[in-house]
Image (cartoon, rainbow, N blue to C red; front, side):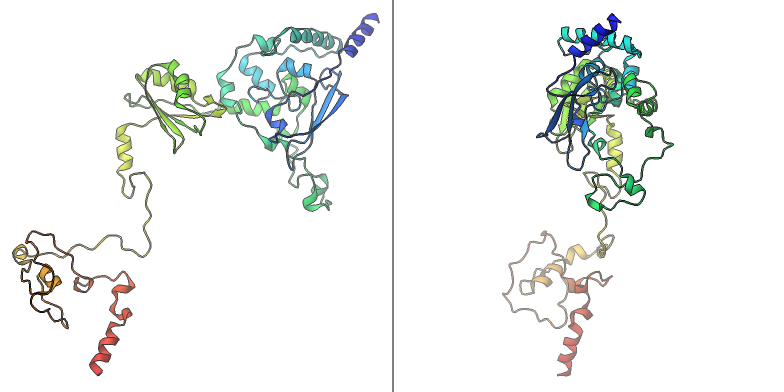
Length: 424
């Protein structure tokens, strides 16, 4: 009896009184000017059952109010958020994190053992510098390939949406757009994700979200090296405006000698060429689906050979930039072939008589009917015989398919004008 009284007295003296909660970026919200309400010893922790300071806030517009669910001691033991209980480093459930790091959970379940374990962890937390987790998690490896592939690098604010309106599901909600709850179809009760327990998530057992992520990790694609052994270039996509060539070099130099780093800022990508194929294969294996620089997950692919690039660029209808040009409606598919010239055309193609009109002087054809030649001495100076020929005017071209309305003499009114002239 005395032991139980002493334990309760110790826990009562060490109830948590904090000034700010331990939260992930998603639960905190995107508003930097957030307001919180603080209630000292407001509720019991759902893990250790000790009263702690409860914080309540709204993470954004049209979002539901959120509050802390566990105390800071339980949060620091597992390095998780006090609200969503997801890992603060990777944004993953505890079961996935422990599986990736091969950590075995040793938190006791009974009340007496739980109090004793919590007291020891509080002393360890007080003696630590606060930069690394405590307990079994602090002794685990720093990272894992599976965790780097599954880690979430950007906040998922969709998780803060309001709950579904139960009155709308029954067809009785009369608030309309003013209703603070979601008017959506609820999740199927048979769906495993609909049955989630906060204690199971903390202890890393029977977590449906963790099972879904572990299945995804087992079916993730791999980056196979190309058959062409001359390719030693990697394509890095999704750089954004923050990733520089120095940061890329600081990550990839560990795999081997780098020949060149080319950044295409317009397309937010880079090409890294290694000196050897072995270094490129090692860099692709260690960086595929797990390369994170400045909080951005970058895409890693193999570059293409020069022969493959030339084959893709030589396709019909593909411009220099690689985009196919659509034909303009109303225009012919190809220009008509030029009229064939006989063998004597080069000899008498030019008319060097300065008294002829410019058109006749250039093409060597008789003037059209109705056009009198200009008087002698009129017109431009005589052209050199080797000067390039001037294309004939539209009226002098051979008859062919009419593509534009301006080429049809009937639509231009020429026939009616000549007809009226003859009637006069």
